[in-house]
Image (cartoon, rainbow, N blue to C red):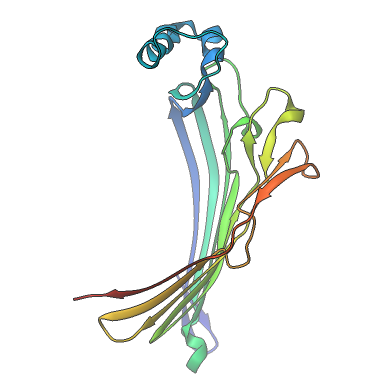
Length: 228
């Protein structure tokens, strides 16, 4: 759409999308020992796996692998906003802003018919995510600053709720700068995670019980691009 603002027209884009999806044969981690107890129809597949890798199925094992099984329903909402301030005078007309936000909910099972698994029991499921940023485009410069938000998620499942491990939410900031030397050559510099935001920061059961975190220095990429 277009937003009429004090003597000028500024491009404005607004969007909303409702998401709904039904997924069969969800692909995810499982414990073979558990499958042998609960899923009799898969015993031959698991046994064949051991025959290929070992001379005989060992005892006292715990093998983790990826298997298809179960189904899930995912629904949610995505909101998006983008605007370029081209109506502003001089230097300021190059600025623009953007933002989007996604909220998802899911229910499903791990192949156990009749059971229901909530988002708090799905490893790696991210219920909230989004980003917001500022751009500047005016020849020869193109600059973009963006913060990426990823909500808290389950990192490691345990039947005992008090032993489940989660990741804290994170919001690293990235910077991208490009300078056009001419119509064919461009210099660029990308700085990933400018403020050294923790990439993985984990807690057990409640946020006050932090288990540890991984923190890295910013990644800087410099280069030249060209069209010939």
